[in-house]
Image (cartoon, rainbow, N blue to C red; front, side, top):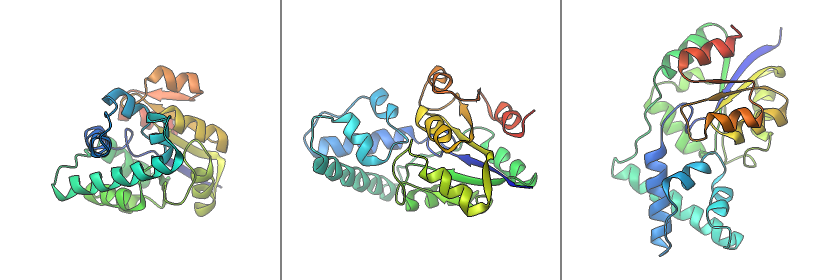
Length: 219
């Protein structure tokens, strides 16, 4: 039997990191004497790799400047950590969902626009890192919705597209899952409207962790 694999997005799916993301992006823009995008605009690009996200926020700039502003963002986020000002709480019920799926024999992974370091710190902070057997980040892959993260996750654990589900809060997650041939599930508590997830082709959209559990296990 092929391994069953559930791959989760992080920001907006496992944890609510919007306040820290918006704070770091605002610092990055203002540090360059630029007007920072509003919260809605920033949240619309969460999930993309940093240079691509910033390219959408500042399309008139050159690619080199997108890279420069990405480094500004990383520095701002690290400064927030030093100030103990990073807030990334788990969404209600997600810790229990992760433990229940693990106990039921599911293999678990993460596919995220975060860096390796940022993801490790987040999972360790919440004490759930041991439940995940494959971690895919923007450090080693093209940005979502390219399927590279999911294809690598499946290859690492011996799962097939037919037994893999991608879970996320943005259309980028759904598009990535479809590109990789997996089942796709949206969550309604993140940064894209549930209607966007349906329009992208999600096989289902859950509005709480209990409903998500039912969708994942096929009940």
